[in-house]
Image (tube, rainbow, N blue to C red; front, side, top):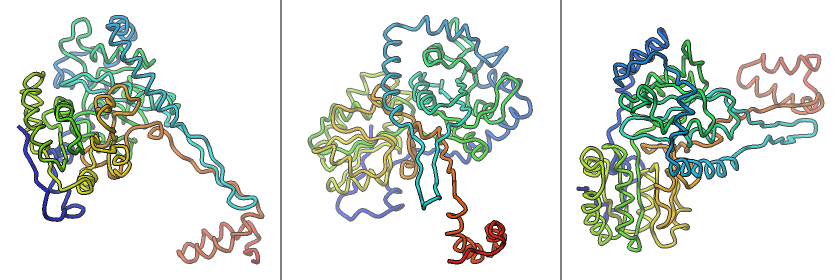
Amino acid sequence: MISRIDLRGDALPEGPALRALLPRADFDVAAALEKVRPICEDVHHRGDAALIEYAEKFDGVKLAHVRVPAAALTEALAGLAPDVRAALEESVRRARTVHRAQRRAPHTTQVVPGGSVTEKWVPVERVGLYAPGGRSVYPSSVIMNAVPAQEAGVASMALASPPQADCGAFSGLPHPTILAACALLGIDEVYAVGGAQAVAMFAYGTETCAPANMVTGPGNIWVAAAKRYFTGRIGIDTEAGPTEIAILADDTADPVHVAADLISQAEHDPLAAAVLVTDSTDLADAVAKELEPQVAATKHVEDRIAPALAGRQSALVLVDGLDEGLRVVDAYGAEHLEIQTRDAAAVADRVKNAGAIFVGPWAPVSLGDYCAGSNHVLPTGGCACHSSGLSVQSFLRGIHIVDYTREALADVAHHVVTLAEAEDLPAHGAAVKARFGWQVPNQ
């Protein structure tokens, strides 16, 4: 069901050579880019008409309008099952608690007497949020995107999610649970648009939807490719690839827990990655054995879980010890990393590359997906070595405010002129000299 990679014995290679030994899904955004380019440009030129046409082509839905009526949001929230509403409300409460603490205050540094630099933080003005609606429905992703944007102070926010072809009274609209989550969060601008065309709608704007400064939210390869296409025109969070879980475990880990956690991510997608890194052969054997009955007892086996666990992106990786295991998980840079070892908190503190770290047996990834308070929009595909998960800071721009008196400028003018001349940019120096009668103050 799941392959093994044995990295014991010989010394582990460094850098790219080690990363090349580790399992990873095939996810060719560059190839998809050429397919989304004409879709994005069609939306640019034809606006809502293109969006309506693509909804019929890709989603099997014939729309009259792309914007969701306000009444549908109200109706979806009213019809939400009480236990689901309570769970969403608790998820929102915990996410707000964590993200509110991430707000940043302006800070002024007095560089010299009369010379200061202040860094202030300004929220992005308008954000487009994307909530997937393919194999599964993700109201939790609405929360994870909207809450940090709201806590950052974003003034204008819109959400897009694919229209559903067969959803009862809500057919032709995004899934009602998505709509209910939007209503719960006070998001009243919602569009029945999916895929690359949703990103294009936010990037260019249409007759109905104003353009956004930034687009965030997970999606399939077409959404990721569209984000890459528009990078530079708009801000993005990340090019989200298939979800990943890596578990660093020793012989103290419970194989029942480990197997369940691997399966929990495998049920997202046939390209989802499930990786166990351990120095215990007994644990690896026990997990492999435990996977069979747990997989057999769950849902989505044939279309998601079985191909995900059997795919080249999933494996049980054997290492000589904890130090080697840490090197492997740092080289892998997992979206989600569980630490199930002795002294798990101390081990977690040694990890350098991960989107989010889950410490010990009572912090499974599924807790972080919904109700830990952390954000589940995280870097995938090894990008955790250079990128962070979504946070309040994702929606803030730092602006430096430089305030110098005449005396403070005079004190450093000769250095400015010297460096300008060293770079063969004499007009830079002249801009300082002009303020002092074209004479650099004596030092």
